[in-house]
Amino acid sequence: MLPTCRGIAALLFALVAPSAAGAVILMDDFDDGFRDPSWMEIEDDPARLAVAEQNGRLEVLASPGGAMTDDALYLSAGPPSCFLRTDSDFAMQIDFQFGSVTTPLFEALSLTFGLGTTVNGDDSLSFGYGWAGVAAGYVAGFLVDDAQTILTPIANPLPASGTLYISYDAILDEVYLSSVDYGAVLAQYTLPNLVRGTWGADRVLVAFGARGSGLTLASGDAWLDDFQIVSGVVVPEPATGALVAAGLLALAWGCRRAPRV
Image (cartoon, rainbow, N blue to C red; front, side, top):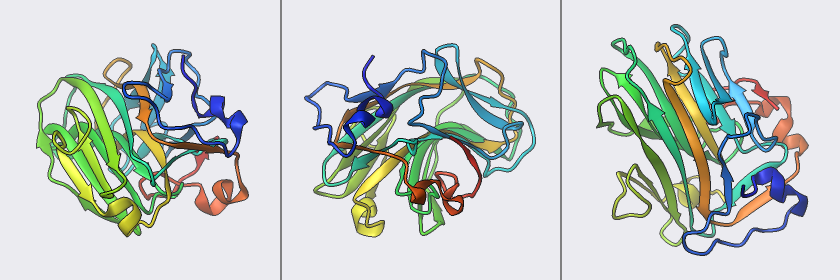
C-alpha cells in the first residue's frame, strides 16, 4: 500500500516530487477499517449523516431529517495536515457507488469530492454524484469568501458507479472536474482563474464524503473508495495552533461545526 499523508509526515516540510506518468504518490483504499490520522473527520449531525470505514470502503450512512447543508467528510487537515501545492499541476481521483434508493422529492444528498484553502472552507470547490432535488446526476459548485455558486447539474440516473476526477493546470490556473478522465478535453466542468487568481491560494486541502439530507442510506447503498493523488507536489506538515483553534473547527464547504480528530 502506498503512503498516506501520515506515512510521509515523518518528512515534515519535505516535498514529494511529482509522480511519473501513471504512478500514484498518495492513496487510501480504506481496506484497514480505520481512519488514518491525516484525515480530520467532520460530521454535522452523525445521527443523520455519517461516513464509516467498513467493508473495505468509505460508506455513507444516512437517515431522514437534518439539513440540506449537513456534511460528513474526511478532510486532509490531520494532524498531520496534507496539502497540494498550486504552483504545480496535480491530479486526483476517487471511486464511487450510489445504488437505487428511495429518493424523496426536493431532498438532496450527494457523494462529494473537492478542494479548499483552509479548514473553514470559505474558499472551496466540490464535485460529486447524488440525488439533487428531483433527479440524480453529477453536481458541482464552489465558494468564494463563503458565497456559493452552484453549477448546472448533469443528469445521470440511479444506480450509478464510476470515478470522480479532479485535475489542475497550474499555468492556466484552471480546475477540471470530470467523471471520465483528467484534463480539459474531457472535463464536464472547468473552473478558470479560481485557485490562485480568486482564492489567492498557494496550497489546498483535499476533502471527500457526503452532503445533504432526506435520504435513507444503509451499509452498501452508497460509498467512496480508492482515493488517489496521481500527480502533484504534496506538502505534509504537523498540526499548528491555527488549524486546530476553536474558530477554525469547521466544514470543508463553509458551514461551521466541530470535527473529529
